[in-house]
Amino acid sequence: MHIRFGVFKGRKLLSPPKAAQTRPITGLASKSLFSMLRGRLAEATVADLYCGTGTLGLEALSNGAARCIFAERDRAVLTRLRHNIATLGVEDRCTVWPGDVRRGLAGRLAAVEGALDVVFVDPPYAHSRRWDWPVLARELFAPLAGALADDGLVVLRTDTHGELPEDLAGLTCCRRREFGNMLLSFWARPQQPEASETP
Image 1: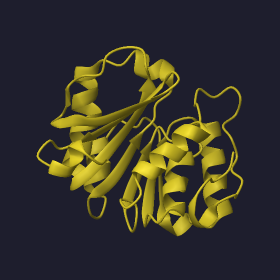
Image 2: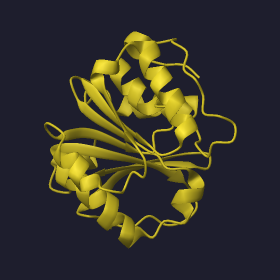
Image 3: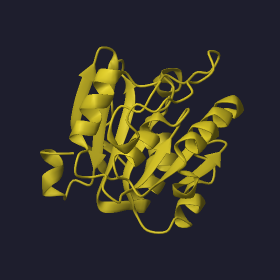
Image 4: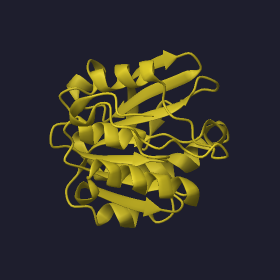
């Protein structure tokens, strides 16, 4: 694994352990995603939830984000995440939340200075297939919606099986892209006129 774009382009990152349930994003999907996010990341505050070894959040920092919050529960994966952060020398721009992403999320977000501009929600596929969407909307997306900037964006990565809800705590899907069995969906407040055109 390596950083694909930006100031850290080409820098190597540790992959998750083979036994981990994390699934790194493919090169084509990553290229498309960060092309779509171009212009949003300069000086942005980003959160990378279910982050694995930090691929998306570190890519965002490489592309101009000011800081990133990483959340991951697997201890072995967390060790590699911290190694990757140190390898890039961005410890002062990163906060790591260990443990269950949803537990105490509202309180953690309340302590964050400023609003979130971009949030990556990237759970293991096995988890997302079992998600109870009403519960998820209440425990995950409602706190995120409350912490999101007015023009902020949540990027959700799941597989293509199953239906997504029309609304997640007041956020609506403004764009979606499929890459094989991978689905990237983009969620924003519906009153933002640009949300239906450019995520």
